[in-house]
Length: 81
Image (cartoon, rainbow, N blue to C red):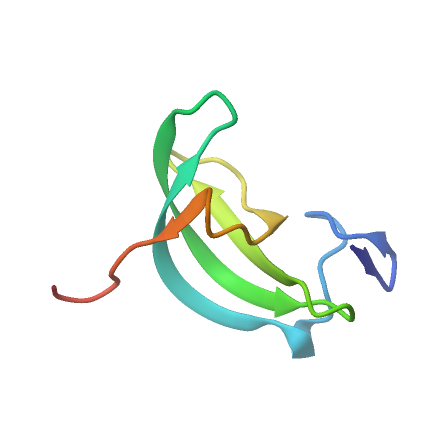
């Protein structure tokens, strides 16, 4: 999705005032079917109403903005079960 400086990327994030910062553990499915743990640390909704998340997979990958897909990004409990 486009931002004020072009496509949404790590170097061109959405406007800070529109970002909602969070800590949300997730499980992420890779295209090959494998799963890994990660976390979402921000949410953003673009002008078309699409929900984006700033996702970091473990271990140590750089965070990246991705369109939220509940089929491949499963939200996990962030506090007691």
